[in-house]
Image (cartoon, rainbow, N blue to C red; front, top):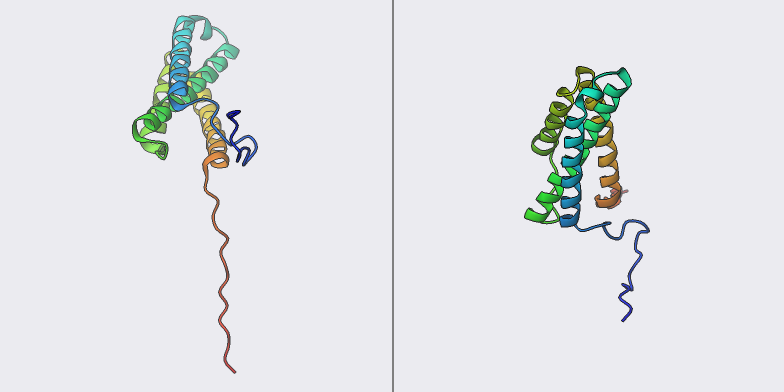
Length: 148
């Protein structure tokens, strides 16, 4: 056997995840820790100019994305593939931690982090909807026959 699934490809580009949830968990956690460490290591330099404070906010929103991905993958590993990330516990926690990281650098970074994190969240949601949403069945219109 060549190892190729006969039903592949069902939807081009959406057949399988790029990596398993465990690998994605490890990658996103390591990258989040790396962004956190780099931000704290260079926070004096990042706070020096206006453009670098904006970059610090964008780095903090990258930390938001990586943290949210790590949390989602952790829940997927622990609770199964059908578990969804919710707005209040997971997204709010990741956003607050990212805003805290931005706050440790500069006040302007907080605003940039908040706005860019919302943009990232929008695109993460739209990609998730394209990949995982179950298409709704078309509704059939029931017409009543009139009696004569």
